[in-house]
Image 1 (cartoon, rainbow, N blue to C red):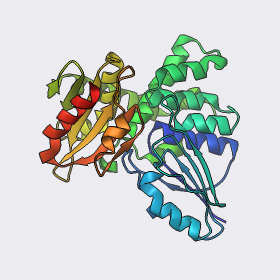
Image 2 (cartoon, rainbow, N blue to C red; image 1 turned 90 degrees about the vertical axis):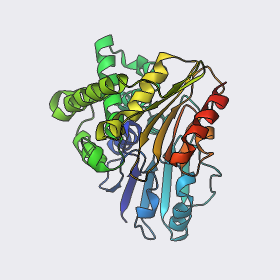
Image 3 (cartoon, one colour; image 1 turned 30 degrees about the vertical axis):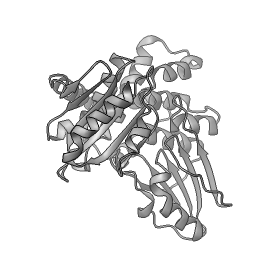
Image 4 (cartoon, one colour; image 1 turned 90 degrees about the horizontal axis):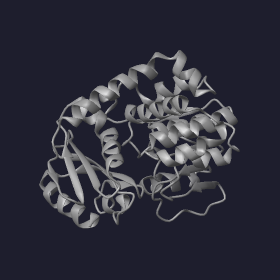
Length: 318
């Protein structure tokens, strides 16, 4: 029997897998990619008797490949917090799926493993822009303010590290980053011993400073859209920048847009914590859209649809 782990390359996906494999050690084949590379299951070459674990990846975007795996006799576990559509019922399928705004995949894994590696769930929640949830998760750990801030920085930098159209845009590929993290049960030890933690922090801060100098492309009382330049730093930072913007105003919806290689745009949307917009519902109106209630995106928005999208964002945010 082979084990295959398919996971989102962001903070939540990496930390979810890390918690699971700390609790359930196993040699596995890794299938992952940049954050928006979520159609992972078609790349899983599994046979009857193999076991596949999927973490932080939309079931709805992988439904056909999941059904094919189950038909071949592959056992599949699925941990996720994105919109799943109809969840299949099958004797070989074990879903752990919850879509509440205050849940991320690492929290689901934290519950599954009995909170044995809680600090990594805290890292993931900070990375997934769930700061109040992360602070509540951290309370039993009795960490002081500076140590909480170190977990916050690590989570935000791991999340930033996953953004890019291709791995060429990334500072480090997600599979390589996971392998660097894998030996460390303690995130503070990882921070202290691995140079990549400081390198990601420095790159994130530099890219955020560049994004902050970009004026809004369109803004109103209810929403604002930023158009970043067609450059590797813009493709790396647009998710972190969207999170930074969302933290500044709980009543305003934000979208950050960056040109992609297909001649259109990639979009990151953040719903206000105190407003009517449901981010994934808006993004799922588009063929390549998806996500969760508070944060979602569109992989490819055709260039002629940008103005209509801005109007749709504004209407949904009112």
